[in-house]
Amino acid sequence: MIVTVNGKEKKLRAGSTLKTAIAGEPYQKGTLIAVHLSEERLVTETSDFELETDRGTMVLHLNDSSAAAKWKSEMKDSMAGVSARWVTHDIAAFGSFPTDIETDRGTYSYKTYDCFLALGGFDNHTTYVMIARDNHKGSYGAGHGIIGRITVGRHILDDLREGDRIRSVRPMMSETSTENVKVTDDLSFKLEDGYRVETNIAIDLDTRSPESAEHVLILSSTGSIGISQATGSFLACTDDMDVDIHKEESKVRDVGAVTVRYDGVGTGRLYMYKERRQVSPVHNAAGQIVSGNAILAYAEAGSRVTVVTNPPRALSVGMTQAEGAKFLEGRGIRQVRTGDTSDDAIIAEQTPERTITALEKGEVETFGVPKERVFRIKLTDSDPVSVQYFKKVTGLSHKPVGILKVQFTFEGLPMVTFYGDEVRGKNLYPQDPFKKVKRGDIGLTNQARPHHGLIGIRLEDSKEYGPTGEEPYGTNIVGKFVDDLDRLMKDLKEEDTVYITEEEL
Image 1 (cartoon, rainbow, N blue to C red):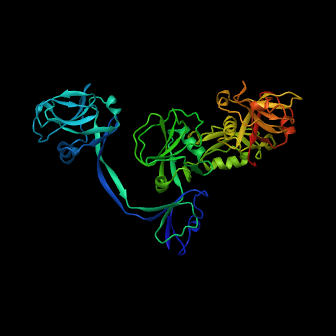
Image 2: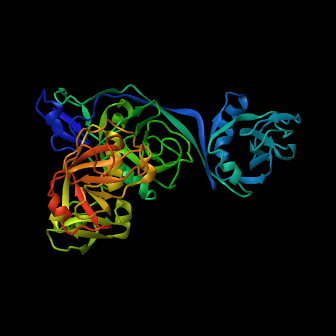
Image 3: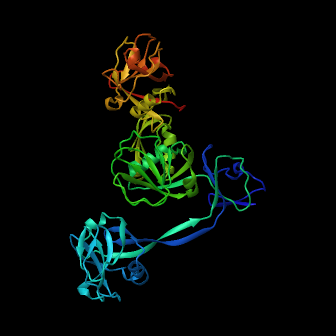
């Protein structure tokens, strides 16, 4: 039998399962797969029309009046190329073109965003389409003449100037489908001839939003993204809301649009849209889904989806200098080695880190350190809030090698402390007080004490004081230093940089 997997036909034995069909395809175990069993689609024209102007695109929603029907059947095609003849406080008038509308000199009321017909000089040879910019009354020669309202792109009315053109008028289409789709993570699901399979959501990143694109790359760095919220309009991922992202590219959120909220409640939330939505002033355009729309349509909250990005992430941190050179070359990026430049040195820092910026520049600096200067730690899973804080401060939240900067150390001191983030540290709620800390325990000062956010490693066992020198109620334990503490402490000074990792390098 023939089964199409991610757009490629595969010849399989009758009764084959998903596990066989997706072999070699981009897929993370436990994520959703869409299986198209059958499909029948019907495309129809809606009552919405896109008016593309020199200032941007507006959407006109027609009402069910006879004037609207006349505009749709007789005047719509005359609109392309007409310009704004005049723009006043009350209206913007586009035209003119001839019609057979009968003259009506009555005075009528119009509400902001109403779209209506008008006759210049009460002559139907000079017919205009007008848009109300404010509530007002007027006599425009074509009776009430309201054909609909502007529903999307209303802000464009503030930017319109006389002479601005309507470049095109396009009907918006509605696609209805009787498609029968099965979404599952059961790899034993049996396939039949003609089935189509999608294993992942593929996203083309928006190069005009490098910070937001990097947020997508970080959230999908394991190969998949968790779905925190699923509505009729979008899927959302809230796995990392502790981010600082600036305003970048904004545009209409079409079906398949990927955006990141950069301001207000929900900053850092990633959205993937199932339906078209207008421009939001607090959403950055991060990318566009180019395949995997069935997974997008049917995924539910609590599930995970495999994500493939174009371009893939270009971060070499955690590799050796030699591995980094080969990896970056494959991305078309030139490596400039700094620090320890030997082939087996570990890349502890990359500048710039962001993929889009690195690709545009075509060059990155990779700062290397000897492998023995990258120390292993193990974080706990019993205090997610404190661990997330630790990862954010050190950078382990988005790369395999993190950084600690020594705040205080002294020979014979039973601990070494590192700078934290006082602002983020305000949210470190006290956890169950420790009964005893051991040599190598890593802890934080919580909000119960003045120096909240401070990070420390305990160098001696203690029942009284934690890794930052605080009593039990002021300490949150986040993990353990599992490497050679004596090697760490040898010649360690204040303001020194310590590199840490949870991985085997």
